[in-house]
Length: 86
Image 1 (tube, rainbow, N blue to C red):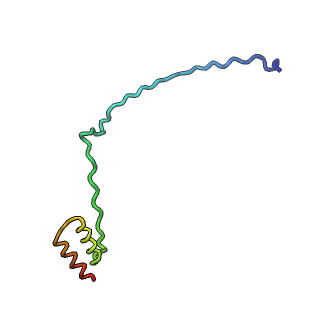
Image 2 (tube, helix red, strand yellow):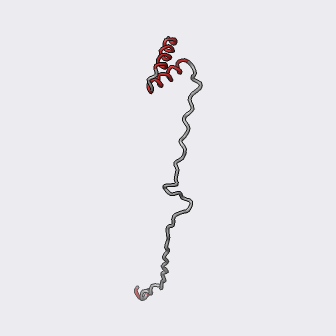
Image 3 (cartoon, rainbow, N blue to C red):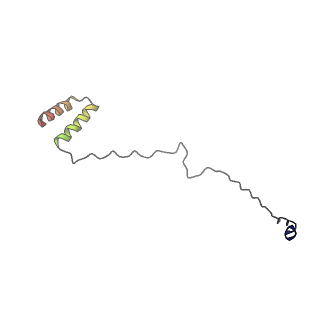
């Protein structure tokens, strides 16, 4: 059977072409430097619900404000409103 195939054929000649690319990094002109960059403006505060203008929601808002501050006038208003709701 080796007579049918004969000696192995030589491999076809191949040529390889190598290319090299060089990249250079440059500082973009549109980007801002650290001293020039500014942060975006703060987002607006969420809107308060105007639908809950009843006395109970007003009482809750006063209670939340009293937790943050010590305002005697607000304490008096809170206590009067709470008494009115009973």
